[in-house]
Image (cartoon, rainbow, N blue to C red):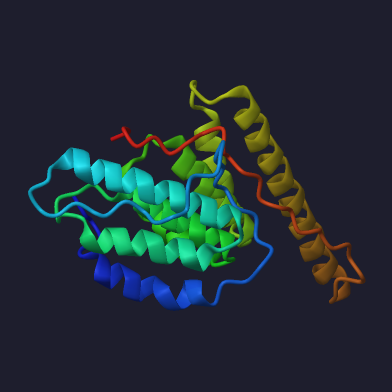
Length: 219
């Protein structure tokens, strides 16, 4: 089912944000080999069935992922929205919305990406990839307490791969460092009335959680 309503409203909410996308943002999407970029498969007409809808979604995702890797998140967004607009009403479009979040992240629109990922996390709370991507975006937005809460919850998942667990631990370590710095700055302001040239933290690039794919079969 489509919890966000008809895709036209969804497109209106995010079209301006993606059209202003900036360069240089780390992308989360990884593909083994670039797909053919002729055009996404035509979306199924009503009555063609779930198999045709699934095929259209898969073809669109392959094209969108490659466009994001090429640094073209706006084009990827357009491809994804076009397919959403033509799918039957009862189609599960969560994979497309997840890819839209990837396009938003790749374009530097982290606030909008977090909104999409937060909704997906509500719908599929057991999907580790969605939760991890949202936590990393929260971290990059400076919402460290919220990010830490998500990372700590995910860390308890027994099925978390070892390399992903190391990434999570790295994030939690950075969050702790920044919380300590915040305390140090607060103490400096208390005693001195200013930060006295306190050290600044460097921007930490968001790593890709590509080893945890968004499984199309997860419910």
